[in-house]
Image (cartoon, rainbow, N blue to C red; front, side):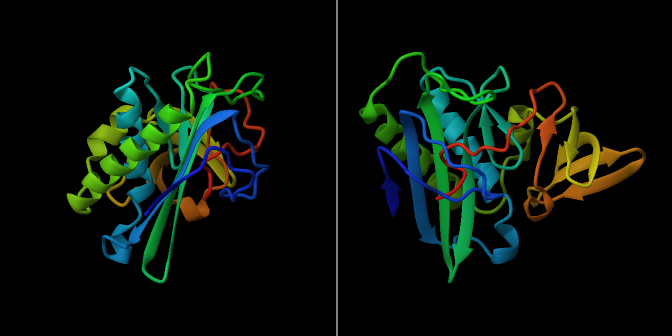
Length: 213
């Protein structure tokens, strides 16, 4: 089941961040029976990000992926996010993308200079869901190289609560591999509160539509 909305007034992000909604945005949640064994669900938010990136690519719009949940424009501003939850065998993947966001807060932006209208938002949500379901049907072996190519973190100095280092790889289970000195550290979504690219303006902690369902 795919649920979309023209506007989402509230939501739940990874860290309880303030909720923001652009004047025009994709706001969608896809619910389905858990498609893979529970121990293989980890990469799904990353696969969902690739699905939205592919949907936007058909419009000539390029976005980058900021592990684990964020969609970024090529200048490093946040344009959306994803979040997945599973309970009682039901998986829900939520996505939001800021399409038009004049006067957006620092570090957040929309993808278009003018309002593209509600029809595009709904069409993008459907395109994203179709692509995600197609990827899911192919099984839990996902294309890490595709994600590596889309990642804005690999090779960059990053910080998170509890440490800092250089992001070097994406593990098979979707975790981020970081070098801290000569030590390899594996970060998983449950342990991460903040990841920041060194060249970006500081993240003010506010969530964009799509960080929750």
